[in-house]
Image (cartoon, rainbow, N blue to C red; front, side):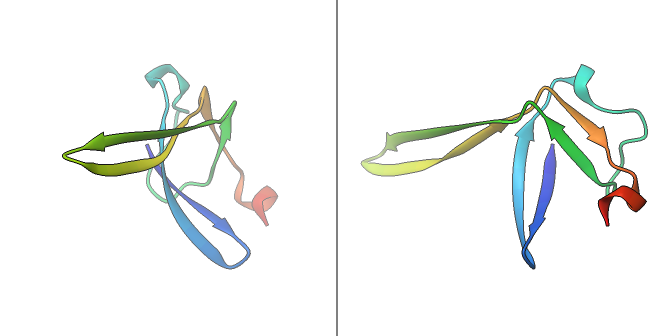
Length: 71
């Protein structure tokens, strides 16, 4: 699942792995969500002599956020 984190006037795109059973009914592009039990795991590997690294995100589920509560 690809989500956009909006914070302090900045946006960052995050790819979060979520089990199919953790996807809320009514989930569609543009809907605000809250990841539940979000874990971030740093990773690194060397491929063809080049270091590649990043952070893998995983959540137990995504909850829909009411638009009024998000403001």
